[in-house]
Image (tube, rainbow, N blue to C red; front, side):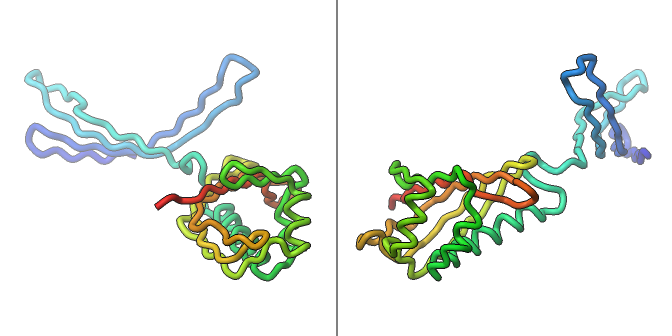
Length: 190
């Protein structure tokens, strides 16, 4: 479908497009896309029309996002539930979100999943409150990255948590559920 409007020497047109790319190599997958376009045209001295500008838009979601936002919403809920579990010292819920290979890094200090779980269980971690904000999720099929800021009150082995922090969590989707494989926390300097 094309809609064309002319006003003097300028014209505006818009329409839709569909493309199917079939690579010659069997190693590269076929690609399909569709979307819309709009363009501005200028009449030339000979009566022909020349494109001045064209804007093409794909109907595909932006890279790192899903079409309906459901995966991003699920990841936000996981982040909220994860923090709530830590405040409640609910080890079983906290552990449910962690892949077996999960590693934790805070300001350059690394800990294994087993070390963190042992510290939560022993009470070395004491969370009073956690407030997350500036949430962003980037989904790439069965992998995702989530960034947040966190304002935390509590102690680790008697020392106040550095706060606020920026957190980057990396997730994989296994058997239909998201699990964290790595967490990187950095103290936000004033």
